[in-house]
Length: 129
Image 1 (cartoon, rainbow, N blue to C red):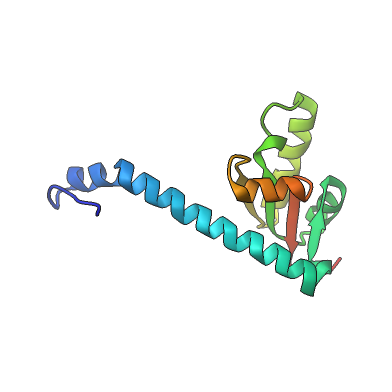
Image 2 (cartoon, rainbow, N blue to C red):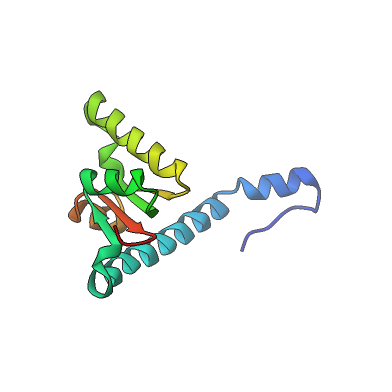
C-alpha cells in the first residue's frame, strides 16, 4: 500500500517521491514494454510490412513520417562512438518530429534484450512504405 501522512500538498509530494511508488511505476512501465514487444512480434507474423528494422530502413521511414513507434536499445546510445551516437540521436529526433513515440529500452530488461536480438532498432509503422 502507498500511504500519505495527510492530504496536504507536501504529504502528496512525499508520496509521489516514495520508493514504493517508484517501484510500482517501474513495474507498470515494464508491463507496457512487454505488451509493445508482443505487438511487434504479432505484426511480424500478420503484417510484416508495418515493421522496419535497422538504421537504414528506419531512417527512410522517419523521412517519410511513417513511424508510429520507435524502439531503441539503450546500447545504441551508451558506450558507443560519438559519431554513432550522434547518428542515432539525429534519427530519434527526426522520428520525434513526425510525432513518433520513442521508446528507449534498457538492455538489463527482457524487452531490451529482445530489441537487441532484433537489431537494436525497430519501428512500428503507421503505413506500408
